[in-house]
Amino acid sequence: MFNLANPPADFTQNPFPYYDELLANSPVTPQPDGSFLITKHADLNAIYRDTDLYISDKKQAFAPKFGTGTPLYEHHTTSLVFNDPPLHTRVRRIMTGALTPKALARMEPGLIAAVDMLLDQMPQAPDLIEDFASVIPIQIIGNLLDIPTSERGPLRDWSLAILGALEPTLTDVQLAKGHTAVSEFKLYLQDLIARRCANPGDPETDVLTRLINGDASGQLSEIELIHNCIFILNAGHETTTNLIGSGLALLHDNPAQKSLLQNDLTLINTGTEEILRLRSPNQFGNRETTAEVTIGGHKIPPRTNLHLCIGAANRDPEVFDNPTQFDITRQPNRHLAFAGGPHVCVGLTLARMEGRIAIQRFLTRYPNYQLSDDRTPGGRIRFHGYTHLPATI
Ligand code: HEM
Image (tube, rainbow, N blue to C red; front, side, top):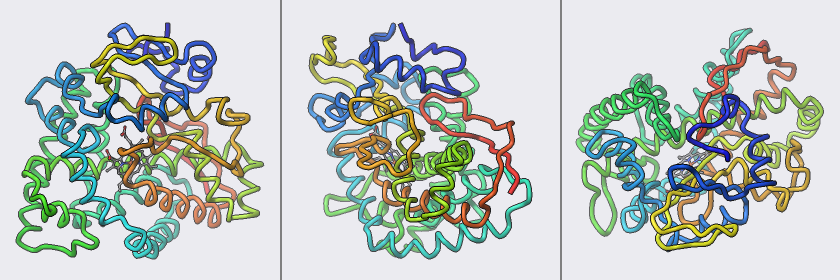
């Protein structure tokens, strides 16, 4: 029986054959700790949309994992993604107000200029993660909260440590790194928030000022404010890095698809969706049942943790023709890379815009890039991508 807490050694590097096997033979798999692993697209889709039967609150799951009262527990149980209404609804409404189509259109020229500057400065043998994919989202998300450029240095490592602590099993080192990152990030944000209160930004564009101002029902507490700022910085960073990095790797490894795109750059729209489908940066989500449910013939008790395998659902042959094939013209493409229902990714339009612009402009500027063999995969279960992609351009 497949055990997510103790997967085969090559699972983090290449989980896809395991997903295919689960979809074919065990789409709902009970786990030794009482949780369930769910892989079918229809099941995930239904679960994401039913917030009465399946909640996002993780206090029960995170208490033994992080210890109540610890920095990671405080962070992950206060961010909107692991909350239900009313906190979830309020924070989400405040955030989405700064990501309207008008606000995104205003961001686009700056994004193009930032990508072009990186391409101009690219060394002959770049690391496509360090020198390109990871730099773009930090700039965009840093701009969204108006974090001074000179203060963005530690954001990436904090983000990797905090999101890394969401892996199904953790070493003591990962746990300690995660706690330290939350504590340092909190201290930094306390200071930034004090400065922003003294000198507010434009709430039309500055998410931090919006979150500080709150809404008609009042302001967020300081702890809610800090942890939701941390969350938005983390949510928009590593995921988008992985979209760009995995996209460049997939295109490199599939030269016919790469040529197709180079000959018709308008295919970047469906191409980005196909990268999201086949290499979802976020491979797993979680929900907890509120009542007994039956999924795939399994009776599942209330208060059970469900692991929702987005990466598998995106390869479900009942939804996708030739699901293992990378096809940049695929349409329709009902992937679940951004989940679904009331928690669907707040930043999905921004992420798509970043992915499209970064990949398209990279391909145009460096059409013959070659990746070397010594790529470093992220080595994680929940977040999929590369930490290093050495290349020549
Ligand atoms: C390719 C890039 C991205 C991917 C694959 C991605 C994926 C996801 C997924 C799967 C969820 C749902 C989690 C759940 O409920 O279980 C989510 C939520 C969220 N994402 Fe993204 N995301 C990306 C980029 C971004 C960006 C750029 C931002 C910020 C502007 C962002 C902000 C958020 C927020 C705030 C939530 C919580 C929404 C809620 O709970 O209502 N994401 N994302």
